[in-house]
Amino acid sequence: MSRRRKGRELNGILLLDKPLGLSSNQALQRVKYLFNAAKAGHTGSLDPEATGMLPLCFGHATRVSGLLLDADKTYRVTGRLGIRTETGDMEGAIVEQLPVPALTFEQMQASIAPFRGQVLQIPPMYSALKVAGKRLYELARAGETVERQPRAIHFYRIDLLNFDGAFFELRVHSSKGAYIRTLIEDIGAAIGCGAVVTQLRRIGVGPWLVESPQVESPMRDVPLGNEPQSRLWTLEELTELIKADEESAINRVILPTDSALASYPVVTLDADSAFHIRHGHPVFVANAPQTGWFCIYGPDDLFLGMGEVLDDGRVAPRRLFAAL
Image (tube, rainbow, N blue to C red; front, side, top):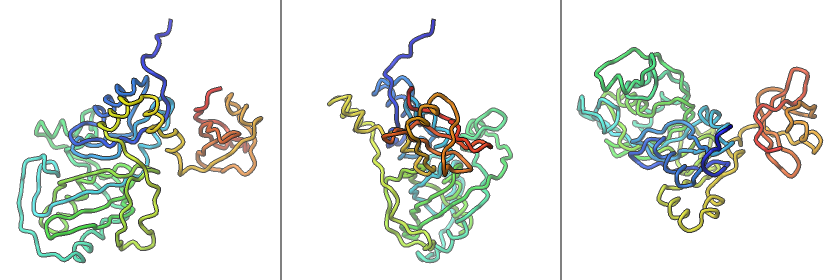
């Protein structure tokens, strides 16, 4: 006899404002408990010493969490010149202090410019990457250093927001897998005085962005300030909403699953084709994308799931979400 899942069936995505000091899993478990959710997962770890956007997926939305792992990320980060630590942030022991050269805002921009575009990053020892089955930070805490292979990272834009001669604030939009602490350390190394992260906040994952500051950027071909905005919810806010009215709170904060898939093409089916797709059968659809995955909708804009075109031209379901 199958065991009945505990908790309520809840489907959709919550954009949590992860607080400082909590791991991503600790934050997830607190929200899961608050909502009494049967199934939940997060979309990639955010360091305990970082704050900001942590998308939490509930129910069938957990099936898109892997797609969000591959999504671009956007951060606001503050760095401090003239210091190097074991961890690349202020949590680690100081290993070196160096004089900071006198730099203007324009000179600091010039120092940052070479890091835009595709670069090779060596993962830091204080990271969650696994080598031979062990987390790098576990090895680092044991005093071990192992060889790490460089990884190709794309920094789509790095904008200098503020600079006072020692502290500098950046807005960074990167591909998946970027280490922002490593970026700050590399900028400090290029200047010749070292640098560490003092504050790190993730403000965007994939299609979601919580702020879009109007800044002057050397990358003028891609303007800032026109990205879609999103709402983050703190643990304190969620707790108060749940106390007031659980059903109203959930309806207010949970986003639909397809909100995570805004960058994918869309195919809309008639009632007959939607019936076959929902039963797992491929169908012919005029003008369907010929490569890659896409979102499938039925009548009345009902999100059915994701599909892909077969070699014979039919649309086949790959991940279905709508119940039969």
